[in-house]
Amino acid sequence: MPSAHRPARVAAPPPPAPPPPAGPGPEAGRGGAAAAALSAGAAQVPAAAQVLAILRYFARQAGPVAAAALSRDLALPRSTTYHLLATLIDAGFVVHLPEERRYALGVSAYELGSGYTRQAPLQRLARVPLATLVDRVGQSAHLAVLHGREVIYVIEERAPGRPPLVTDVGVRLPAQLTASGRAMLAALPKAAVRALFPDASAFVKRHELGPTNYAELRRLLTAVTKTGHATEDGEVTPGFASVAAAVRDHAGHPVAAVAVTYPADEAVPDLPPQVLATAAEISRRIGRR
Image (tube, rainbow, N blue to C red; front, side):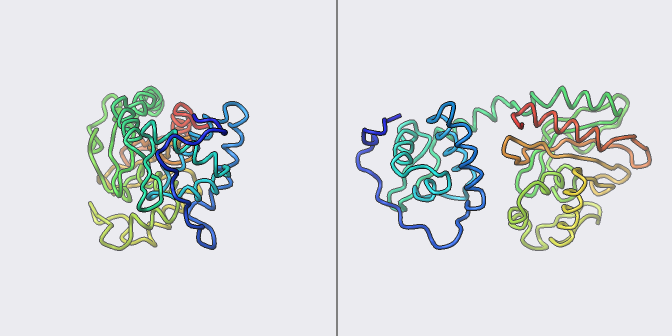
């Protein structure tokens, strides 16, 4: 990383960003938390903590950002911000968009994400806790991830003697109908959920059950927030019900959900606590504290 007394390694310094608009920016609500987290880590390895904070900041944005916004929201000195951006540009993790006077994630960041996908650490870390859950409750369980308005099932652990389910690996289902999807949607900001379900056309049905508009979905998600777990009964497959809980990363973002599916006419004692405990264990394994 360039020192604080040497110019950044770019052909020409980026033009000053225009002053931020009056009022809070899109990250203003989280700027204080991000700055606090950065300060906590800076006591150990300042440069590393700052670089990681910048990359996480970029990953949360809907589009390119100005250096001034980055400096403000992470409470970084302006000169330090440009030095760090220059280093990240050299490594390919950030690109400068001169016409927009903004910055965005570069190809190296994409390669890093692709490597994560190839190595499938989430599935590897979740498989044993999921199998343990199946042994305890005697019902089939699965792990799903959210992709837009759908969930994709990435692990299925079938209990001995239990029938196959529609939730096989690779299957996609409407998120608002599944317990897994509801668990993850409830953990997202309301604005993000609203953007996913802007009107009635976004609500797909399977068996004429489930929410048909945003107000109905919001009521379901509010109940999930109160209890910590989500449920569905017959909305995916008639005669079967599910209980699910979100798996969260270090920032509290829902990266997956654990669910158990069982015949609706069978009682499964203490199922929600068991599902919640498994989701918490997987969250701990992927780095949540």
